[in-house]
Length: 79
Image (cartoon, rainbow, N blue to C red; front, side, top):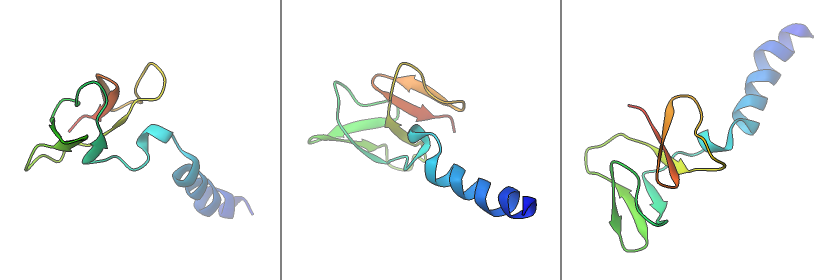
């Protein structure tokens, strides 16, 4: 039973219910006041710069999770 919890249930619960900021980092985001670092405005969206692998999500709360930095109203993942 302990094996099941550590190997199957815990990783599954972390991937399904983990930090909302880390869920589905995007290369196309709804535009807020300004686009985050490494993104540019296209219509009402923020798109990642061509060739960039940078990911960003809308920030929830006042800080970003470990490995991300704040850029406007977004959190951008370090490379």
